[in-house]
Image 1 (cartoon, rainbow, N blue to C red):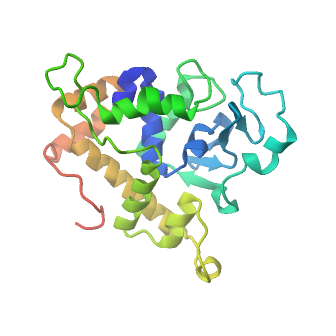
Image 2 (spheres, rainbow, N blue to C red):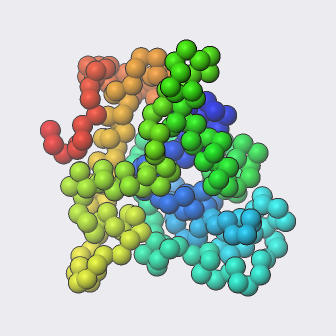
Image 3 (cartoon, one colour):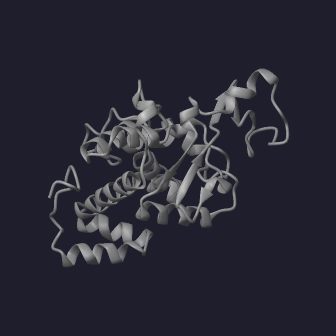
Length: 264
């Protein structure tokens, strides 16, 4: 919500959600382009990263659209080839979005026509340091957090957290929710170790279990919001009003987000 209010709007809000609900790396997420989304599967395809090399943003070894020089210019050969691939072959994968997160992602796709799904307010691809210093750190660290009397005081949330910690949180959630290791590693783009690489396989039931677990976590996060926070979110995203109404009918206003949706 702080990223939304910092001037990033829907793009900042959804990028933060994608960080925690996909477990994707920075370059995998900000490198997402419109054609890499499968609306039927509600999944993003991770094939090539957005990388910053020598001050230039590259996607698949070529200059990213919107970066200085334009997408048609090709950088020197030393920056091509494996520079544009995922960290390992296992990193090339589909990552399904929970239904509620997919709604936000699709709304973001419809909100602009820029080639990169996640981009600056000006439509340019993100540079990591710019995003971190101008938006991410203030959102988590607050403003004058130790001086409540300051005019611009905003309390800190988690002063230490980095964007990559969203990936750590994601895999921790899946572990808590009892997701098998092979499914966790496949979602994060990591290969299994030893003979498990040969004998363990991801099944449709495992994929369904992941989506169900993440969806329950999302609903749990809505349940613990204050009335003022719910009102703000509903004003930004009217489709959430139905979810808030359902939570109110269930008497979940004071509910605590459970650690695992399968431990009832």
